Structures are given as structure tokens and as C-alpha cells.
Length: 122
Image (cartoon, rainbow, N blue to C red; front, side, top):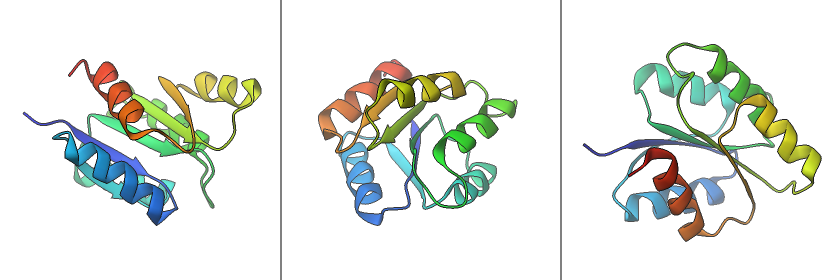
């Protein structure tokens, strides 16, 4: 069974790059351009892992992570945060919110796939 990855980013370029990299490695993907769209997408299609941008309008990535961790249906889903912020404080905030991995943009496609595989043990 193929793992389904939720890719959440308000940048269509970043979303497309992540989606392309993951699909090239055999993963199914679901895209969302906001935190609200991500929550809606998960109601329609459960996912095995999420790759979430930290900086988005209306609902930032950390808020989305907290919402996912509060929901029994998504509480255990591995989450990778992707951000332009590389300070230790920002990374700490990510891990405190419940992310499993923190990657700094621009992400290396091979590193993203390696993180996904590690978290899914695929």
C-alpha cells in the first residue's frame, strides 16, 4: 500500500516541488494551500504524514500542527515542518508544538524524501 503525504504550503512553487519529489519516489500526495484547506483535505482523505510550511497566512504551520495533535484522528501522524526560519528558537517552537522533524527551506528533495521514509519507516 502506498503512503499518502499531505503537502501544505501557500507557495504553489514549493508545493509543486515537494509533490513532484514525493511522487517520483512512489508516494501519493494531497496538496493544500493553507491550514484550513489542510484540515478539510484530511476530513476527505486520511494521510500517513504531513509536510507543513511554518509561515502561512490565516493559520500558520504551528497552529495547524497543534490542531492536528489535538485531534485523535491525526494525533499520531508524523509531521515535518518546513520553514525559512533556521534559528534554534523557531526549531524549539516546532518541536514543542509536536513536529517530528524540522527542515529549513530551500529543502533538498532527497533529504525530504529521506525524512519521509525514516518517519514512515518505508
